[in-house]
Image (cartoon, rainbow, N blue to C red; front, top):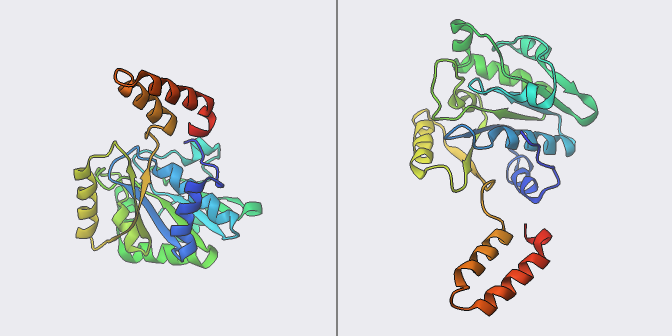
Length: 237
């Protein structure tokens, strides 16, 4: 996970459309794995903390947990769907008002079931809300179903707003539709969508491609486009 600088315009827009509008519990998910959920969740958590909000970032991604390893923090202790255990497992950074809770590990079947129990999850979130202003959850993909997952719908049922991440130009529309339908079947409405343009070509690349396309017909214009594009590469990339 390469952290996004919180001053980036994209992060500012995400923050303005979610936390700044009063959404205090967010479940960041996607239709497929690898769509940038962890990067976006971490960026939003840091941005909320920078605004003076006491912020908790919780990793519920049991399929591919990475928060501790990628941020270089130690898993302090194991935790289950229990407030006291979760508080003991948090890594806190009081100076920046941010706390991190890596994914629970080694859960038994019964312990895992508690994360799908609406009352247990509601009690857990209530305990977190008493200490934090903002709770951001890094969730597994909706369409990633296996016995070890904590479903994004269970987190949303505890009061978190569903924010769906879509990887532009990569995620098939049918998979996004399947994710929305799956959440709807659990009574969850997607509150917002974040379009991750990680693999979109830059303006520099688009102009160079256009110059190549028109070169057989208007070589002089193509040459001028290339000259302008190279001169302004830093701005256009």
